[in-house]
Figure 1 (cartoon, helix red, strand yellow):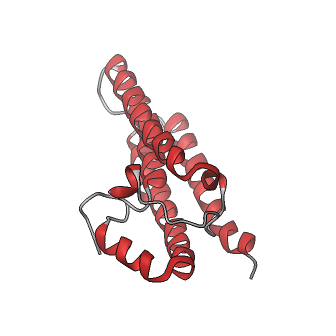
Figure 2 (cartoon, rainbow, N blue to C red):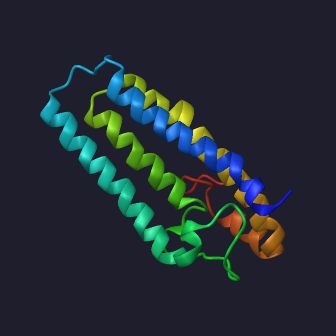
Length: 156
């Protein structure tokens, strides 16, 4: 199977899950009883925190940010947010996406982030980890032992 086919399913699932959360958040009328101004402000802050993590991560992996599951760099990036977690982009995207249901006060949307989007990101990350292990071998194994998957200080 080619590299693009290996990454196609995880990428597609992530995109569909994100679209699903977006639609659920905006269309399902089950709202948290909190003032809209508070929800919007909190949601915007959450989106900005997640987006900042994605941007910080992208600054460290540069052109590999737009890659598929297979590694595009010849070095294993361990700087910036990669000092703490192996998948800060996926963590940042999950945090940012959680801001939408928070801003729209959507319980189903927030649940969707954790039951649809996060599992799809973790599935994609597992594909990526296999490719990184093949590419970087022992260096990858050492890195895995020192960093959390998507949460700092939560190791294997």
